[in-house]
Length: 322
Ligand code: PSU
Ligand code: MN
Image 1: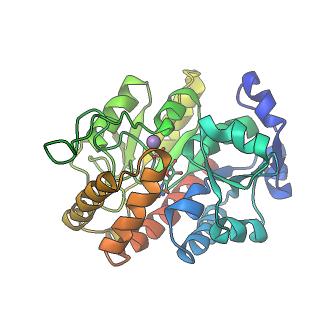
Image 2: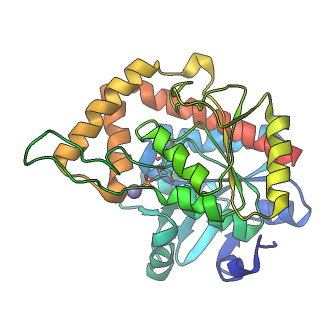
């Protein structure tokens, strides 16, 4: 195991690699890191555990070794066995761990699920260059503008911008996703990624994918026709040593998508309800995802599952090509 840069030696010393992951890294075989917050907080049981297994299988079929990341008893696990996957999917009170809460989770010795930001930096510490998720966090709606009804209930800008964007700016890992989560302000998310020097490339489309839908209405900053094209770009970008990661966006397969109008109607309603309920901070994303699932009779969950597995497969092919 060789951390991507020396400053991560401290984190590297806290990693517990699964045998298979350690062996693959030692022999320079492709590895794909996977996050675990989507298991503990992003999807209901039993779809969460099914998707975790299916994503790992998809990485394997593509010729790479999966390394799902989580935190337990003061160490960072890189590669989970079946029992731990099950615990993350079913235990109550699993903590959502991102860059700002990684130290707290390790110091407290709790069981924690890692978000994109924490999983990415762990991947970098382990020397893993490719990471897959469903959708990244980004600029929440109402982050920069007042939101809610006019009058006393109107809320000031929340400034809620996911640390996932900061992580992409400072950690040189290729992140495969189906676009920013549709519950976000997608154009603002793309603006921040550009400002922070993160290349965004879309495979096989000229629009940024809209997570559960294929389109978002936002033009792709860059497009490539296939995974090989994304691999060329990733190799070049990571080879330059600019320090940032890159975002590789893959549209959800056509047969699995939720029509954009339907997704948007549910998201708009769930977002208003979240504001009215007073939910904020790290609880926002899980709350809104759960409410959108209810409002779409589970169709958003089916789409979310399909896109996660598809992204894992693409990440496996990308890792093998690198
Ligand atoms: N993608 C999904 N479902 C999720 C998430 C991503 O399909 O639940 C999680 C990721 O772990 C991501 C996190 O890093 O949501 C972002 O949370 P926040 O907006 O609080 O930064
Ligand atoms: Mn947030």
